Image (cartoon, rainbow, N blue to C red; front, side, top):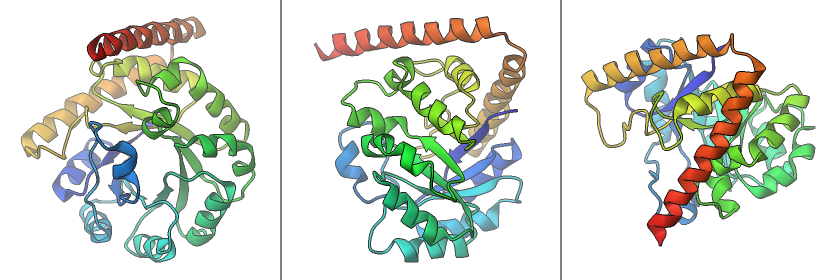
Length: 278
């Protein structure tokens, strides 16, 4: 089965193109609380999406893609925010940056079965409380957020968590409960510091069912050339889907070789990062 691909945008035209070329989820990102403090100085984008964008994107896509909305971490206005995004058409609501089972339980109670729930596991606290979290009724899926989680561990490169076995450890726990899961983001097939083809193979080895098309795939935050968008999704996603068809027939030996290759590539990347800092 192909990975469900997610793409973040509040641009209706880009959302339509992404849906046309079989992006499975269009993602509106409302998270702002605490993000600047956590990721300040990094090459990340602080979202300027609004609740009104949920309705805008809902009305712009045809329904082949589902609408996913990342709300803010639990705060005093969470119930209002969750009610609104569901009213405006969210199919999936994602909770970021939680640490306790109680926060996850409160979020699921607020959604109250009106949309699919996705927990974004991106804190050490959430990882430590994962066994309890997995027992909560109504957890529909979990995505492992490598960016914030690697910062919590004071690592230099987000895919260290893939190379050092941490992602596999978390995936195994979630898999044992039969809950769908995914992790991280990917660029075009042969792009990215760690090539996307090697990350995608790890998704298949680990039984992941979801991946984010990252800013490295197409950065709609700084560009909106619709002809370029069309080319990128047509050919970029087409190459990824063709590669996935090949992966479905590969042997265990292939995936073990790829796992070791990822470890080596991450080690090499860390060396380059270290040299730049020195």
